[in-house]
Length: 236
Length: 107
Image 1 (cartoon, rainbow over the protein chains, first blue to last red):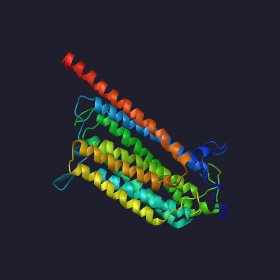
Image 2: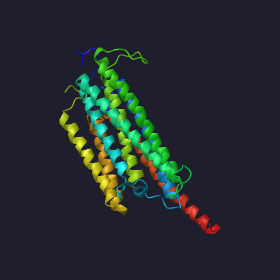
Image 3: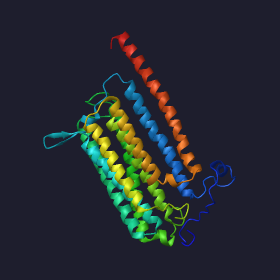
Image 4: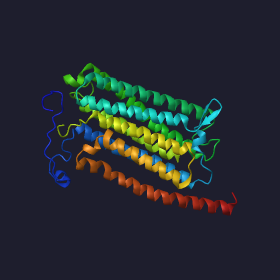
């Protein structure tokens, strides 16, 4: 990594025992750029936020006397005359996984300093992400038209609406923020900021390709959260 | 590959990508085939953990990280399981109290 001026200088000592590294009286996370460590710490805290949403969902679902709405039917779409269960949700899941794949490749090409591939793949990720948010908006509209509110709904337990809007809304917000940053990052990569080490507008820090991996961590986390929402909220 | 830089062959990304599609299709099939009860919950959890594991390990490169950062990320998450355990029991208690209340008041 030393040859490129834009790379973060990370000195990587040989691996020793984990406890030795923790107790080395220096950096605990050796070989990890500070930006990446900070993103991981943010993601751990975000994990707690989403866990609390899902745990409160579990609590209200288990403690309610009223039957919980059948997600398979609530989120079904009519194709012709056939009602396909969870169709839109399945498409959204596949779109998010596709976007995760393109992001993983963008990170890979970022490390190879392949400017164009990195930018194109990040742009593709952003477009997939935007289409995901679009479908979520469609889903919200459909449910609101059917009379689902945070305090009541025509299908069963009134808590269903509160949990649905809270959890998918918070996840959708994360996706939206991710899409905005992906567009910014794709532009930066395309312009060659990561090669020239151009200083960032807000941070005045030199740009480097590690930023692509940090972006990737955030995006994969959004996909990861969806895996749990899909399992617990839509399939359970 | 220089240690510390996350450069890995293209093959592994495509392999995981395809796996994620397959697992998603399977978990959708669980709903589509209308499995119920423990079969349903078991399969949902299985595919969920597999997907989450592969995303975390390969796409987020955790598999190649050093133990100090891996443990700093993963160990706090076990606290969540403790919280789940507590609230699981709390919710059944709440339900019991509600049922008793409605039984007594005839609601």
